[in-house]
Image (cartoon, rainbow, N blue to C red):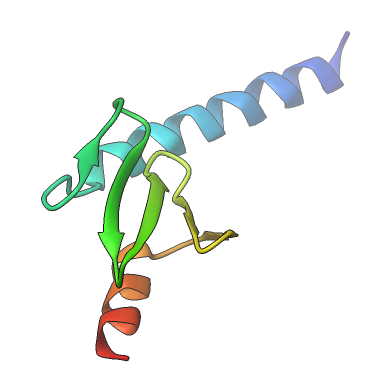
Length: 78
């Protein structure tokens, strides 16, 4: 496979390490942990689903990525 195979192996390894780091840095306090990778909580009467390894969350039918704690702070102020 040559250079392309090496590139894709490195790419997969990079993302695996990044997901592990995201999971290690996530704070589980205040969350219901369904699995190691899927958490949820109530926010303003709606369910907030969170996948910390990918930093992905879903709220009111919309999927977002990024800083879930900042999103929560912003929503709680409203």
